[in-house]
Image (cartoon, rainbow, N blue to C red; front, side, top):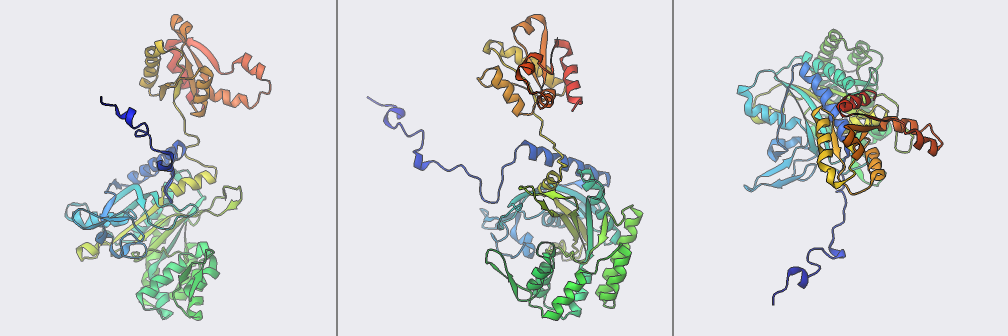
Length: 502
């Protein structure tokens, strides 16, 4: 006699309790439900529309790049799996999940340069991955949205990116004056460091990274990083740039030079770094950007010159810019908080040259979509508001499912999302389900309605609004607010009125 598997091994289909995996999210990664997804999609649609109106074309590149294509432009090291998630392909070559969308663009431009229109103007969005220590608001996977111009050395190309970003942020839901774009130039910093006696490239990069933390650590924390180093709250020690006290104070004084309007700040910076060839070149570029921004209608309330902005990545070669949220926001405990940077960018004229050997000017901007969505939500300006559910057709009888599906098909054909309830609960639970989905309406088609050629429509939005004003449950049940029985042919029009009322 042979026995079935279930007879011989009753536990084979279901692992023992000790063998079951724990349901958990990997550290630094998050699950996102409808509200987050819908909000980010709305931001991407709004910003993409701006980019396309400015003449930028969409581009998608793969999630993986060869590690040598990233090279020294990895975040902190050129070793795989430090800063990036990397693995060896079947041909024994290292590939890594993209750290940003700029390095893939540089590779694409070098690979296709002969066939591209020049300058090449593209925008892109998608997830990027960073193998870094996660923390509050810092994730290992997040969505970026970039716009770049490759092939133009003109400062006006930088100004155009800045103006376009200002328009894009407003399209995403930030009103005028809610964010400011801060502009600086690496050439000014290079002139300053030369005057301070900083010539080693590694030390220069350490200075840039220290100044880049000014917004988060303040002058005292940056002063430590410009010197011997700093120990954070966890006890971890970050080695400093090794500047002497005089040089460190000179750098900090430079970062504090931003005052008044753009022209006024440039005049003050000329007194600090003017006279060096590189410093004068940087000042001239910022002056040209200022003039172009005036022509583009971008005043000081939307873009300023701020010497404290450096951007930490090594590949920037000239103007750099950063967008900062100015709206008041609250943290999870309801306490006021400063959200800070919501994106940045700048000029990177050496990135494509890694592949071609020829300098190719490029400039661009990137903002974290998830971060911007969080900022909008914290400021009470969520693009998604609440993720709306579909209209729900209540299911009374298994024998009538074809009729319910016909109603849902009719509603969907009119462009209105709809579903038939496919659980096994009664009407009360089904109405609760529709309410939890934030459905605008529920459709009731019982035997009486089917016989009479009618439908009953319950306006759930109106019901939610009125429920907060009624204290007598009996009165509430008796009045049946927002509920109407109408001819079947008027269903779509009734639903549209409910949706329009939102």
